[in-house]
Amino acid sequence: MTFASRIIVRFLDDTGAQFSGGYNSWQSVDLGTWSQRTESFTVPAGCVSIELRINSDHATGDVYLDDITFRRIVDGVFIADGAITAGKLSSGEVITETAQIKDAIITNAKISDLSAAKINAGTALAGSITVSGTALSDIETRADDPAARINGKSTEILPGKIVISGGTTLADWRKSGDVTKIDGGSISANTVTATQMTTGTITAASGIIANAAVETLKIAGNAVTIPVYAQDNSIKNFANAVDWIDCVSLTINRDGYSTALQFTSQVDGFGSAGMTFRILRSGTEIQAGFNVWCHNLGEQQCIAFSYLDGNTGTGSTAYKVQGRLLGTSPYNGRAFKSYLSAHQFKR
Image (cartoon, rainbow, N blue to C red):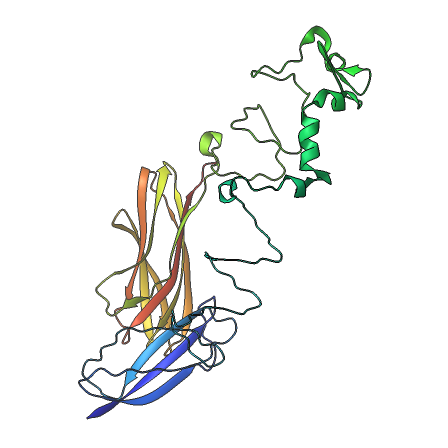
């Protein structure tokens, strides 16, 4: 005895909206046995996610699914993992994470990082290596007598002083009273101009920063705080108007001020489905009654709401948004791509 099963594939863009068309296929399957189904379809440009549905022509009974796999095919040919082996491989370009080449003949090598440990000792390369057009052997000879080359230019190293550009010395850079000093403690004020500076800590009475890249921001008085956010892309199914289903949650370290919360989510239903959402702080409901309706099968809506929690507690605090069906809703509903952010202000 057989029954008819249908595979439905929906293509979604980065906003969760469905592309027109899609893919579906009917096929007869024997009852009581495992049957393998293989389908091929083309994913449209701009698709970022795929939704798979299985339908049956039987009104009752159980259907079991196992080992659902999506694989890309090349020119209509499916290639299983590990199916290609070769003693020789001819290709214009091969890109891989790692490679072991037994005997390699390389015409033109581009190596981003070469370890000296990989070069065999005793290899004679000095005669063929040049630095800015100078052979490495010549650089070795010049290193034996650096003073002769330095003194041949405008910069001189003499006993007791460094002469820069002829008659200029470091003494010409000294401020009155010999207050210019670099001793690990300080540099004379207004003597440093730089387009870039790398340092562990800078302490200043005031500062102007054009473009700042800051890993950890600490501002006196907590006048500005960095928001905390979380996103849950999984599908949340609402089957009744009793059980609350977790949609998304986050934890923020509060400093005794009001907390601003923002929530958005994509929702749809299997008919005319109404859904309601609520906010919890540390497991306690603080606001409810955020409602949305989807009036047609597969129709997607976006619910978005903001809430200002006036509680001024401190320390690590968990916020959560939950959803369920409205009491009058006759069909199931779903929420996905749920986003929640929380941040505090001090003024």
